[in-house]
Image (tube, rainbow, N blue to C red; front, side, top):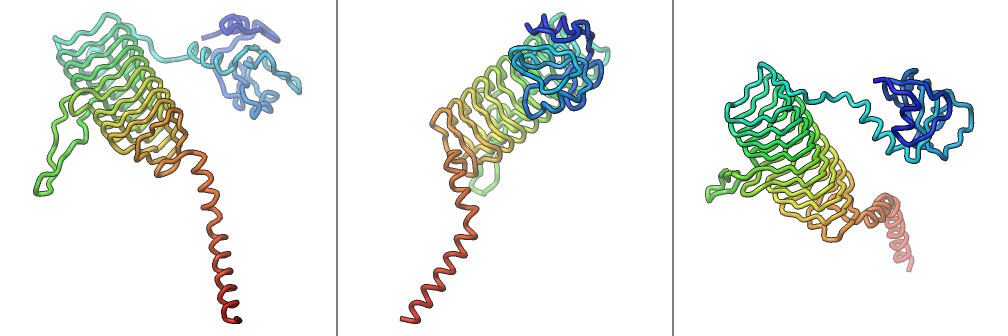
Length: 346
């Protein structure tokens, strides 16, 4: 893709400063910019690179004033980050659905694949499954019985959807994702043996849900494990049976949610946070990395960190005290010694 500075300015509602005919074919990081690429300056931390980058075009804010001469043609915009987001879509190399079904794909006669959907090599689409228009199912995927996949979804290589899973529109599932696997449900009998509880529910993903590489979402024991519209999940996340995650909530890598946890909408959860089962987390909660959540989070917009998770401000006050414990211990020992000496002299 070739695009000129003038075209970029028109696309991003910006203005050109320099040669409007300069063209680029790819984006680049500002510290690694090469001729023929476009880069951007959005944070003052990277300003020094603006004077050394070899990129041909650089996106900057309309208010930015350079301290030195710059080589790239500038495209000035109101919001650099928003413009970058829009721009990257133009350079997105993701394959578009072309309606091709590869000769090695196995499509059950009772499956319903919409015209325009693409099924790539060595993928299986089972009986009763439905695939929406414009959806791409990459190679080596397995679509179980009675699975429903909406329109304009992208399933990357090796995705597995177990029976009765429902995927909404515009969802993206990255490599190795498993959805609808059997939930971890056991009960001990009188002999202390673990007996499997049948997991007969399913998983439902609403529209615009993204699931990262090798994440797993277990089906419900009864009913549905539910991820609401706009949920974003990073790599290596475990979502247990009957979990519900509210709209536009996001979680980083290696989060683990035990069964029947309820996450509110607009929550942000850091990496390696662990949730005990049957908890409720209020809307807007922000939970710091490696926190352990053992109790309900009842207050909206809470800020929690630590294990067990507590209020962010309280945690750091306690941590400040914790760091001083060695000095405090030495002081106590010294005072005890002095007190003992005073008593002996009395």
